[in-house]
Image (cartoon, rainbow, N blue to C red; front, side, top):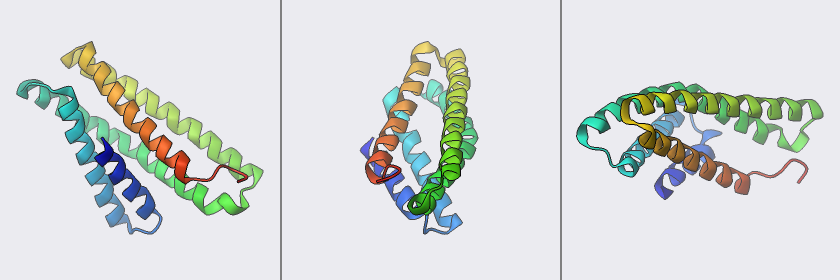
Length: 150
């Protein structure tokens, strides 16, 4: 799990300076590491793992837009932080709400897909894992980004 966070930290810290191709390579590495870790966490037999991997690949593909929006928002926050206006702060918070809502909706959609194919326990583990990773990333961001007004 710590390996995933290390990769994310690398992606985020280089994100502002990296070329698009480099950033995409780091994101792909992050998703690959994450897929490996969730596979180990779920501990599925070969047939179930193939089923899950197909669903998870589709999830990651759909999640890409949300991830890109989030990365863009973080970059905007870092760029605007020193002179953040009320209007800019409002836009940032509204976008945060929108991103979180889309993320929840997507997890719910894929929870249902995993549940249908592999049962509620595996689907619950999928959601638990995704939320653990997201919470860990959020924590790392909170520690590294200044609060508005600091």
